[in-house]
Image (spheres, rainbow, N blue to C red):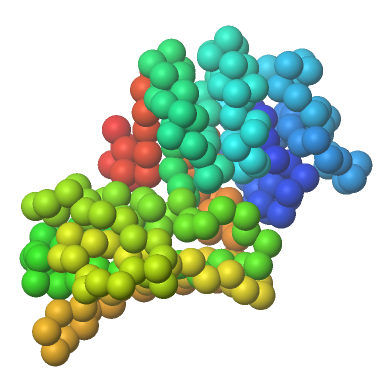
Length: 252
């Protein structure tokens, strides 16, 4: 049994994760972290990690970048592995996560969907084959309540493609101020916010007289919840280090 601390338990994703965990017999939520609580949780909810009394085997974090410092301090001091799914971190915060991973197991991913991780691998393969003859554009769409833009997933896709490009790419987020032709090493990244779109990511490879498009659509938040829960169970007995979806799928 994997005992889990759920950070961001009162948010939309937090509630979905709690419901999904309740359906399983290999894990349970022993405590939640959230500055807001409506009293509906079936486990104790604290507004800070320092107040947690329960013993845990893993943390799942779908909250806010502001929570990171307290989360990492708790994870390292208590030797509790953490699955960090929050996006919008600064470069300094990313560095803090990497530093913490030297002392405790950290699973860090901007998207917990199996399909998205397949999309990244397919995009990398396409970039290898098509090379500089095709321009690359990434379009991501999310609901109108999402705070960060571009999405962490869009950046994951761009970073994956960058790994296989011959020349270091330049990420271009907005073209309205540009009065020049598109450079060959650019990766355009565009954000759409509207309605209740759960999440859609499209990678466009535009060549001479032909276009190749790879698309992933998330139909519900459950796909992300299930991925994070599986990651927490997987990570609970791991040694310090950085882990990701590829590691989990390959059983490393």
